[in-house]
Every structure is written in structure tokens, then in C-alpha cells.
Image 1 (spheres, helix red, strand yellow):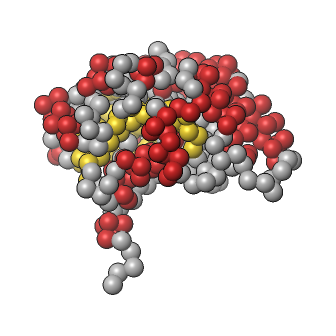
Image 2 (image 1 turned 90 degrees about the horizontal axis):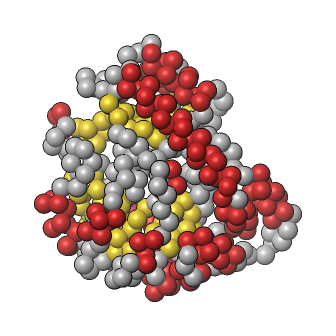
Image 3 (image 1 turned 180 degrees about the vertical axis):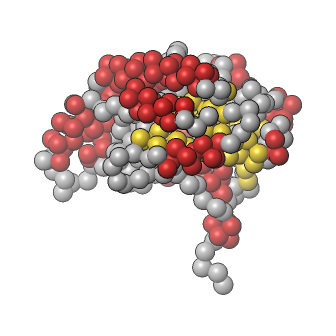
Length: 359
């Protein structure tokens, strides 16, 4: 008898971006914020570290929930903190999906959704996007009708585009929930919070997830949260680890959220650099999707993306080479390209200088 579940044995597993441990790299591959978090975060974590670490943390993250609730104009029982946004995606999968239920998600997009479905043993189905990253409703609507969970990153990755509220409302499954993964929402020119939850008939069918890894510069401490109707949050609490957020994370999260102005100043810097990066890529002959995130999806008409990635890596410059098979409108049914994180201005200068010598 095999020891490993067949579902796990068959799956490839999600592969995160490269994380070199030695210094000297220009790292533009995993959408980290190039600027440090608010100084208040380190101060809060230090105080917590000097406190009662022998005692379990607040299992509900009460202070953090109150702060999020105030910022997002909901009550605290609409909020659940998590060990990074990915934990909330896992909790949602485990809470709402039986083995035979369908998980749907746009494609190309964040492939972790597929891995989560496979881990749960649920069925999964890709909703193929048009070449301009818009929805093909002839493809999308029948899948949405059958789905129990629809995962939707907005802005999308790797493209960075954002979809309208009208599109979002059409993506709510009649017998399931829509998960709005807002990992990059703070970088959009028009920031949204959880306003969609206040629409009549929508509040009990939509879950909004956020992370502090990107805009708040806290990828290293793993902090995120979800906002949804209290009935959905109560169900997710049954599934989470008893103490899923440790004392240091809760302290740092609260301090970061309470210094939103610091985060917004960094976001503005990234938006400015994003505009310069896209202008420069255009001059170098790249096509790009107008991004509402902290990264840019760049392609060239004649391809060669893997070769560019390899050449940059040889110069200790990391971008993310991504490939998506089974895309009918792409040459050879394979869509590939470079997802480039918006770094500091000196980091982008380093990238552009290297690209000038390659293309």
C-alpha cells in the first residue's frame, strides 16, 4: 500500500521564485517591496520579543482585527488574520471544498490555486483569458455556474491588469464563493478596500484576501488577512491552526497597519518607477501590459524570453521567467514572458543597462 496520497504523489507542487541567499543580486523576481517597512514595525516586534513569549498569542488576533475592521469599514467579526495571504487561500479551500467540488481560476494567473485544489483533492478548471487579459464569457460563464470556489487575483499576476466591478459581479458562482485575492491591490492607481462586500446580495458570497508582504514590505514575517461575512469567517476559524499568527507577527502587523502613510509613500515611489520602467521597456522593443501592480509583464514579438532571463541571471540580475502551456492563441500553445518586479531606481537602472546589451 503506498504511503503517500495518490493526489499528492501525482501533483508537481507549486514552485516559488528563486531566493538566493548570498549578497550581490539585483532581485526583481518575487514582487517584494524594495523599501523597508515602517520603523514602528521593528520597534513593536522588539517590544513583543522582550515580552511574554512563554505565553500563547491571542488566537483571534483581536487588536489586529479591530484595526483592519476600522480601515475597511466592517465589524471585527468580519476579519480573520492569517499566516500570510496564502494561508487564507488554504483555509478557504479546506472550508468550502469537498473532494468532488470545482475550483476555478483565470488562466494565465497565479498557479498556486491549482496546487491548492490538488492538495484538497478537489477538481479544478482554468478559465482561459483572452489575449488582452479580458474575459471570454462564452468560456467563463459555464465554468462559473459549476464552481464552488472561484479564485480571482485582482490585479492579476503575471499581467498586472485589473478588472472592473462589473466583471467581478459576473464571476460570483451561484452555488459558491468568489475569492478576491487583493495581494497587489494597494498598487492600483485607484485603491479599493472591501467596498464590494456592501453591495446587496454580494456580502455573503465574496471573500476579500490581503497580504502585508507586498505593499507593507513584510514578506519576511508572513502576515495576511481575509474579510468576509461573519458566517464565512466563523467557518474558516474552525479550520485554522489554533494559534496561526505568532505574537511577533501580530505585533508587527498592528504597527504596520497603524502607519499606513509610510506604506502609501512607498507605493507612490513604486508607481513612479513603474512608469519609467514601462517607458524604457517600450523603447527597447518589449510589449507590456499596463500594470496596476508592483511588477510588469514584458514580452518580445520574437520571443527569446528564457535566453534573456538566463543572460540576466548570469549577471546576477533575477527576473521571473514564466511559461503557461495550453494557451491556444500563443505560438505553439505556449505563452511565456518575463515578470519584472519594480525595484528601486538604481535596481531598475541596473536591469535596463543589462537589457540594453542584450536586445
